[in-house]
Length: 441
Ligand code: PEP
Ligand code: MG
Image (cartoon, rainbow, N blue to C red; front, side):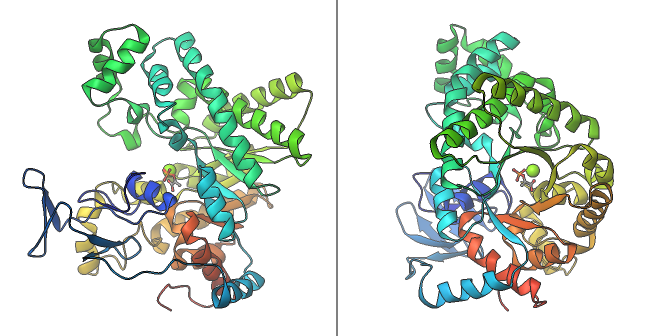
């Protein structure tokens, strides 16, 4: 994906991993274009009676999902002139904050240039794919002993510490929400024999052992499987390493700049209060250890994603142990509808065409159903803690109509990928002024 100028896939949808990662990187991505077919043997892409051969140029609009044959004239957006003035006006009128979803220094810097007021979601799993780290990640997963996992995690710790140090530096003085590991471990496993052999060699084991472990970890329904806080509960050492990296990174910045960042540590896929209690206790324990070791104490908070119906319905109880909520409306849409976010792209267009749904609910929040769940959770959360900080970090955080809904519910901020920050600033102002937020308005 780093090498690509744009990404076009036949499978997936708006919130598929490919689409989310591409959006963060500023690469146009059209995921789930079910109307195209790719013949790998003849290297031809067929769509709407047209045939495009490997090497021919196409242009993608990642916002509308359009694919054009040939190259289209484009201009580089810049925050200057009339655009800059419009953004200043927007900032004067909006109530909600606008943060960004970012995990690399480049994304964080881009988002700052576009006016982001902090990070609302740092998906730490994206930091695990770096070529220098993936071997240690795989060693950690393959190992079936705690000591083996800890040895691999010790290799990852300095990388993660440096990641966080850089993000805290770029976002100086602004909030940074870091989410602990979320996806199922098998996502990081090697698929090809050569990669599996590399892991086997590094661990002094057989290829067959790696294959077997990969099989053990594979799940029929990974999106509802061993992911999110369920990982942190089964393998506490993973969350411990990440929490340590966050605190050590933050203290390093505090010492360098005299300006201590206030990390917001976020636990994913919580459905039960007890899950948050246990994972929060792990984080607090690591904080106390690092503060004692360094002789420095910093402020921090621990909160949770609200992205499962159970969490939304029991938000008053969960709020007892959460310092903040961030609505993960990608998973919430998936689980409220019972729709796979990776497969729905194939049939949702028919639903929109047939008038069953006004829009793809992964693009623009389904106010009636998913929105109701958000509203209930926000109210319940505030009943327990009237000042509970609440934001949204699902892809809807960059969609004007969804932003208008967030204003109505009284969320404190929206968080979206860097390139959507200006749209979010404008939409937040329109929402505060009571103007219907729509990109076409
Ligand atoms: C979400 O579910 O809305 C979310 C932000 O998390 P992710 O997309 O990483 O699952
Ligand atoms: Mg999620």
